[in-house]
Image (cartoon, rainbow, N blue to C red):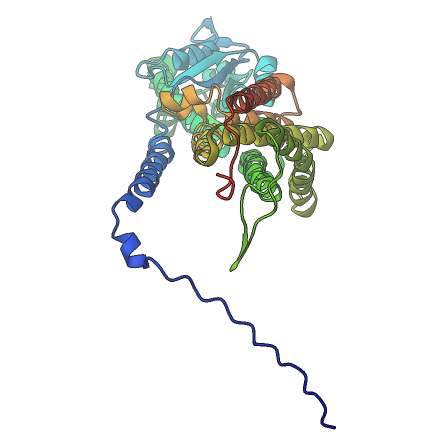
Length: 437
């Protein structure tokens, strides 16, 4: 008896690609170009104006750059009279014409100047040493090689390499002008008339400038820029983390598609209010900031050996900073939907970078950027990180301000975000998907 053959199954048919509107037909439609064109064009224009507008001419935008003037000269007898030429030099620098409001000269005692260098309140200092007048009085005397009077200049790399460099350049020019003015005064003294050619040249420009670091930072501090880049990492972790969390939660709750390469899937819709959704996203942003901040610190302080003291405080500050940024992004996205990505990018990155005062000092930025720095998160966080890394975590070095503004920003983000979602929920503006619409 012949055996019954097994039934053959039909081969599975590969799904046909959808046939419909061609790409060229879509591209010929002007309406598809309008919104992306406007947004991309405005973004490119604004970013160019903001980033380049604050860096092209820092010297021209200088506004009250704080530099200390310290006179420790004990005075001496010059031409038969008791004088203190150090006081004369300091006063001449502070009141020199043509400075406008570019520099804010602060006449301080030595201890106060060192304290303000160590807290980042001044960008540099000029100090007249104790024997200045006595050294000047010896010029043109019997000695063939008289000592040259010297002014000490202290830099402060912790405030940033450019800020410290600007202060050093201003100090060098100020001392040179003071030296020429003092030279005119010395040339009129009787003892200078019989001096030799070398002595007369020395008398014409008597003051030498010696530059040293007033408040040193570690060699692995990026010339003072490690605070900025560390802060940028915290902001980017909070920003991108919040957007990744937001998309992941929407996918898990069925309100967004999960696309990986050519595959697309959608989970069943979970009935949940906007307010509860925001609560989930905020909790995850805070929770994952513990992970991201720890990894940033591991990479920076352990693997790359960045100079950093007060590591426990730096870690706590990093977690709070990244959490604050994440909560702000979640609140903005919950209120504005897809447009929230652009808005939060402007708030935390586009406007924050040029007004942070980290690469270009605030005192060398146009007034618009100084206005933004009053409330922009990047500036506040940079001040806090800089205080911890470079200024021994002193409260008045910017750390207190950073904590206060971080708390204000966190509370404002939560109030704004939950107020908007509760309003949407009360109005019945629930989230829908195409299958349910």
